[in-house]
Image 1 (cartoon, one colour):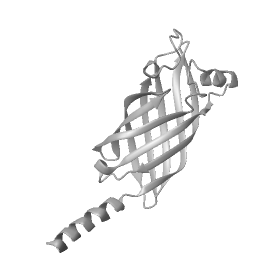
Image 2 (image 1 turned 180 degrees about the vertical axis):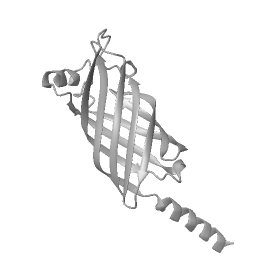
Image 3 (image 1 turned 135 degrees about the horizontal axis):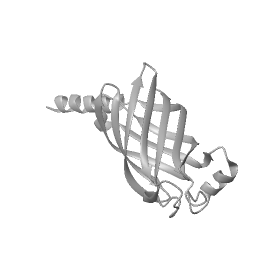
Amino acid sequence: MKKLSFIIALLITAHSFAQTKQTVTKSAVNYEIKNLGIKTTGKLGGLQADIIFDKANLATSTIEATIDVNTIDSDNAMRDNHLKAEDYFDVEHYPKIVMKSTAFKHRGGNNFVGNFNMTIKGKTKPVEVPFTYIESANAGLFKGSFKINRHDFGVGGKSMVLADEATVDLVVETSK
């Protein structure tokens, strides 16, 4: 009986170690929001992530990512400084945006949906992120797009010229 218990424990342990941590090798985080009815775009850099994603074992897959809000780049230095100010992202007090996965679902083929808790300016809200995941022997490619309401996170105050909803596009390449 002890031998059987040991073998079962060994198999469970081996399976949990089979999950491969992926390292981010390249990323692009872009956003789009309307300001005065005009599409305004920008990007954020400094993505860091702990990714353990196995499309065959979603229950044990996890992603935790942060992005450095100080890297915001809207191609306009004056606007970037305004976005870093207290009424927008308040980077002095909240320099990072954090996303932590809570669950993943397979939607068929290379299509998945991730449920995440997103924290911006100290406020955490659930966000659903549809994405594709393509893997090769040594690499993975995540591509996703989702919308957030800036009011949920206290970004931008009660501006009447800035749209409530922003679209975020992600492309993350990883090595295994």
